[in-house]
Amino acid sequence: MVMTLLEWTGERIIPKLLKPTNGMLLEHIARYYFATPYIKGRVLDIACGTGYGCHMVAKDRKRELTELIAVDIDDDTIFYANREYHHQKITYQKADALDPALPEKLGLFDTILSFETIEHVADDLLFMDNLYRMLKPGGTLVLSSPFGRGRGKETSEPFHVHQLTPQEFEELFVRFSQVEIYYQRGPTFEKPRDGVRYFIGVAVCTK
Image 1 (cartoon, one colour):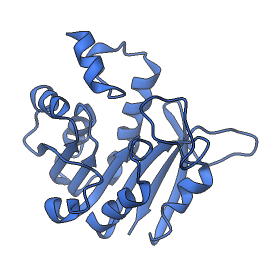
Image 2: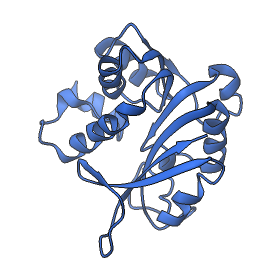
Image 3: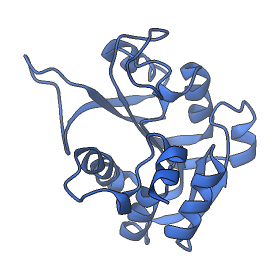
């Protein structure tokens, strides 16, 4: 069963199959903890994976949260999330992040989470347009992505289409009224410091 789950999840995290000290697990969990203060109203987690993060924020922000829509493109992943991380305020459903009709299908949100997703899609600008259209005025987007050689360039990661440069990453958010860029190092987040090389960017954007 373990091999089967690993095969269909690719990079998706399954906490039950990993040691609590696993570095990738700690990084992924940290992103949801980082985003928790921004969770309110109607929330979208796009490419939610196995659902552990949705469940975390739903429990922690149950008073501020009215509804959490969690979408992923993989049927087995959605099935697993429904089985293992059910919550009365979470709806797991299949959806394609690059579907131009996605905003009409899902509606508007107060908060959108997108962690380690944009590097997996062929058209990152269409993806960003969908997110922008689904975010309410004054709403918050929290998005993370690893850095790499740039748009359209090969990456050593087998599941990544490409990895943006830090400059390309920042340029994704030009339409937003307010943008704060953070950098993740392991489970911690910080503003840039001279002489430090960062591998993961996290943007907090207000429409």
